[in-house]
Image (cartoon, rainbow, N blue to C red; front, side):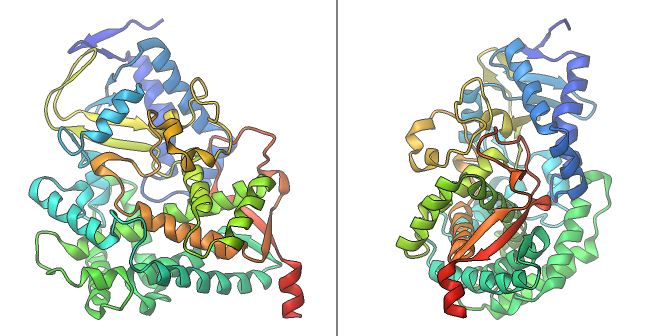
Length: 453
């Protein structure tokens, strides 16, 4: 057994344990793509259950070292892995001081396309940028003032998508869905004029591919400026019922950097699309839950879809799109086992908490009801949108759009996974489900078929 050493009284991993941490926990997540996913690596990671190995490795650290946090002497900077649920809650709640969201690795990546975003800002600048995000996204309101329009956008684009599906052998795959999803996102964020602005999305994709490499890749400053100029153009147009219209009320040159916040909204909506596609797969694999969703769609006027929103949240619990939640200590901090130095990167491995089969009986099964009765697990860190003062300000608008898209898809249509055994309720949910490799067979309901006939 490796010998435990101590730094500032906190347990410190041995060299061999640090290697295991880097190769089993960090490497798979970095290889999959931190800023934009790599489909090929996602396929390999799912096939070889690399995420399950990551969870088991963190559990092994917890079994040996207890509460932790566990320090790692990496070649780059000190890192600490959070092992205890109370510590995870503390880190989330005590953001941004002394646990800053502006962690160094995160800054090096996001600076490729959004150097002024609130997430990697500090002090007064962060306060103003965070306030702008909360105002535009209306994070304090259960329903955005443009919710009816956003729901209509979702319905229109899903109807167009389903027409394309009929010409695609009634098959819905990720490329078809992703194109439609991006049209929804562009209209929500920038307005209807941006519906077919495919080049804007491609520019962001290229910038995010570079961002995957962080400090190891030179920044494409001209492309970034071109992309930001496009965004500024839509803000100038200020199309009604778009987020850009709300951004237009802010002075472009202010410290809030209004246009500089918009790339994050476009970027963050992609993982929401991944969660939507996975939620559809979960419903296909769980017929009773699919019937329940269908009843909600039939009875509840959009955008009131609490069960569908719970399904999206559950997809994010099972397969978190932000598996590594990073913070950086801004001062020395005290823990139950000792002190932690300043400028230490703190890492919360979301799958470890979301899938802890030692504690959660729902760890590896589809359990959307936990989101309808949040008191059940209020003391356990389930973090699909992070939490605390650093919670994703777009949480409510994301759940609105994702559930609206699901409702539009399932309205008068039935979906079957292709192949049907891709996901089944009789087996534990896999540690990873690649959205890129999901495919559905789509069938119109009998009533709709007769109506169109």
